[in-house]
Image (cartoon, rainbow, N blue to C red; front, side):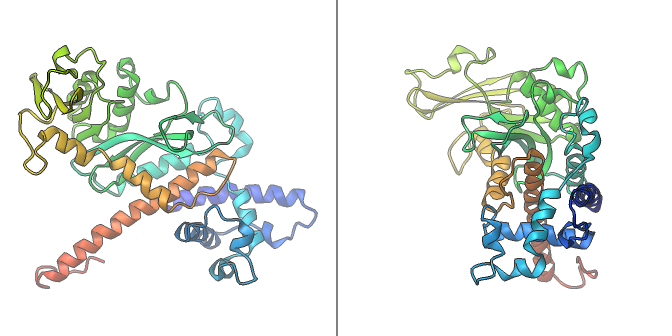
Length: 379
């Protein structure tokens, strides 16, 4: 959350507070005065403290209670009325011209700050050798054209973020907000828009990594031979599970009663390896990889190396989603831009925690070595 993001939020929040003062008889009410950067940092700190105490859905009256049941730290930082007015006034764009802007940008309410946030995530960290792509649902039951029904998710209604994360450290690296049919192909060329919609999503998310020889791990919603070939042309490899109804899958690779349990069947081309592994009777899993080109078996799990690699790298987005859910500052709201803002705060804390962990490990390594080897402090 860089200063330019906070300054933009501050600008439009103060504009909304000015509108509230104009409608109020007592314009000098302290809870309706403009907010400065110091106070805004205090406000963000309160939101993060509600995540620490897991009181993000607790009534504000209880949090700021003065009868001994509330928490003193909140009352010491900001009054209840001030906190509620700032929370109500939070805006991320100019509301006066939003209707005109929305004709060309459905995400006009948050598109600018979200784009800056994603660019900051990419500029601060070089992603590892393997990345994971998956969808991240954000629960929301308000009225909005962005709400998506996802029956397989715990929160069946909400907004959907398409994300690319580091497979090992779960670092949030790239994302976009799904806003209906055709949104997956935005920023793509006419030739790229001819691909399948899931393939368009992967190509869009991996644009910062093109030509870097990174590997992309994704599930059967995205994986296809078409996607593997498209990524290969862009200097990337791909590992993922395949659906059994794909036309590229031979009949011999499908589940069968005659196949032996824990047996594997391989198919090779110049660039792609297809694997069918029997987990149990009449149950087979299909994987495709442009990274593996042999029938190697993982010595620890005694499974094919492709499966072991997929299992170790497919949970990047799910892990960061789980961390955001455990400690979240998200409060109940009927405004979808607030839902995105809360998720940005949650993701920023997860990324910051990853940085803290890595720097702590580096400091421990430095302290274990001779001081002559590291003459300058790292911090």
